[in-house]
Structures are given as structure tokens and as C-alpha cells.
Amino acid sequence: MTPPPWFRRFAFAFGIAFAALYVVAVKLDLALFTVYPSIRVVLLGTHHSRDYVGPSMGSFMPAMYWYGWTATAALGALIVGIGAAFLPERWSQPFWSGWLWVIPVAAMIGCVYLTLPWFRL
Amino acid sequence: MDTALLIIHGLVAVALLGAITHQTIAAWVPSRGRRGSFVGRFRAVTPGSFATAIVVLYSVSALLGAVLYLSFRVQIRPDLERAGHWPALGVFDLKEHFVSIGLAMLPAYWVCWRQQRTDEPSRTPAALTLILAFIVWWSFLIGHVLNNIMGFGR
Image (tube, rainbow over all chains, first blue to last red; front, side):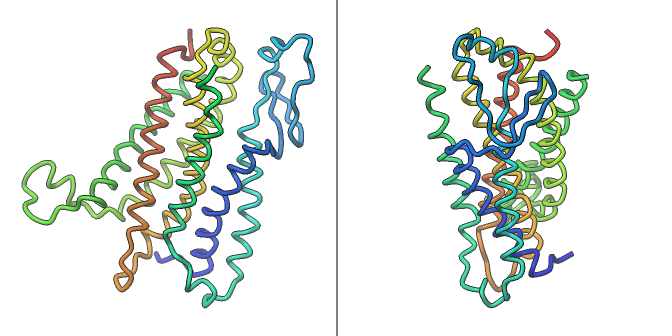
């Protein structure tokens, strides 16, 4: 089965846009929603604990942002991908397919950089 | 329940590890001569034939990992924090980041292997396979290391 051209444009744009947007979402802490697994609550947007008196309380009600960051990047990439799917075929001709792996590798390096503080603790 | 899910997650990951490693070797060092040896036959497979299976296995493994991550955050991570395993938590965070990026690469990866043009030879499918192989190996090893430090069912 050969995928149709519109799906090819969607898939390429989605993969590249997601990788770029994911690093931005992590860096700027743009989670579409925040998950509190211990109390089974999901709140729209990014929420951080304001409990400065008892920071250890964070262990009892941890917040999770990974799902939200992924959703933010996926939503943005979906919009970019749908836009690319509607583009005329001739507009995608000059596209260098190497961007498909260059951008994700750059995003992974970006994630390593953003994770470095863990190794300095 | 978590232990059962973790075992299924591990089994799916093993299947994925085998498929992606096979495809990576076949894509980067294809067999051109004798195919009699084990290594020769390992390299002689058609790499594109693994694409759909890898997409399915990666998606299932990521989904199971995402479900288990909820329990990990509540039951295990606080203890790891109290014990000061910061580098272990750092590499686990990287695993999550890499898995997300890899998940979004799957549609493009699948398209690349499905419509490889003979008139337009490209290393892009092989490059995408190599990145996914790195992500899968990283995730497998880090998942195991963390489970060994402090796993479910203690």
C-alpha cells in the first residue's frame, strides 16, 4: 500500500513540527494540561505547587507535565500537518527529506540540554 | 496490576527491540555476498518489511509506558527522590522526551519506508530507523536500570 501524497505531506510536517514544538513546550513549560495521579485529577493548563511552606508535600500530590507537553506539541503539529496536507504537491517538491531526521536529532539534543540540571544535583 | 502491565510492556519492548535492531542492521550494512552465515542472513532481510510491525509495537509500548508512568510517579519516584537518585531520574526524563519525539516520527518513518523511490535514492528511511533504534535501546536499558534500582511490587 502506497500512502497518498497528502498523507506524505501531513506525516513529514507533523514529525518535524512536533519535534520542534516539543522542545519549546518543555523549555517554556507549556503543558496543555497537568495531571495529578495520586488524586486522579487533570487540570487544564500548567499548574505548579505554591506550597512554599511544606515543599515535601509535593511527594504526596505530585504533578505530571509530560502528558501535557506532549499534547501541546501534538496539537501544534497537528495544525501544521493539516495545513501541509492541503498544500499543492508542487510546493513540497523543493523539500529536503533530511529535515525529517535533522530536526528530531536537534530536538533530542535540546532535551538533553534541558535535562542537565538533574545531573548537577 | 502494575506488575502485570510492566511485564507486558517489557515483552512488547523485547519484540520491538528485535525488530528495530534487525531493520537497522539490514538498512545500514545490507548483505551483498554470501548469506550462509547467521550474520549474513540477519543482514539479508528486506528492511522495509519491518516498518508496519515497528510502528504498531512502538505505539503499543509507548501507550503501556504512558499508563505505567502514572503509577511510577506516585509509587516509585518519590522514593527515588528521597534516596537522591537524581541522575537516574534525569535519564528517565530523557527517556520520556525521546519516546514522545520518536512517537511523532512514526508516520513519516512509515511513509518513507512505504514509498522509497528507486529514482530518488535516499538515506532518510535508514536515518529515521537509526534514531528510533537509539530511542528504543535507550528506553529499554533505562527502564531496566530504574526497575532494578527501585521497581514495582516492592
